[in-house]
Image 1 (cartoon, rainbow, N blue to C red):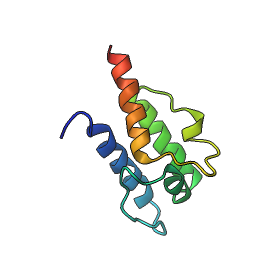
Image 2: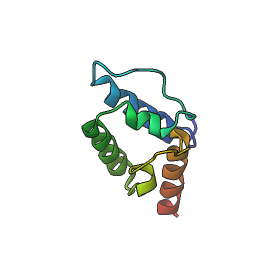
Image 3: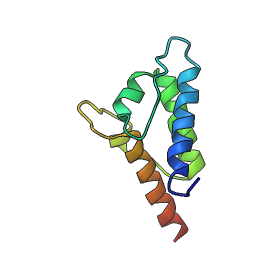
Length: 94
């Protein structure tokens, strides 16, 4: 596992774990190309909040509103989220 792929793999695991807690959820595979809008729509509000808190706590970052708020028409993907986290973590280590 490379450092570059670590945030993506961790984010996918967190998403899948949060969605798995809902028995009615559609557990289609989450990949780097999965739109975040699709992920948020497949979770209830508490699952989204839990995921965001876990990500912010684990990586020591505040996620921007465009990743969390009104995403109607958004093309942001899970891979974009991983890239944002990697970039923020790299800046924090510099």
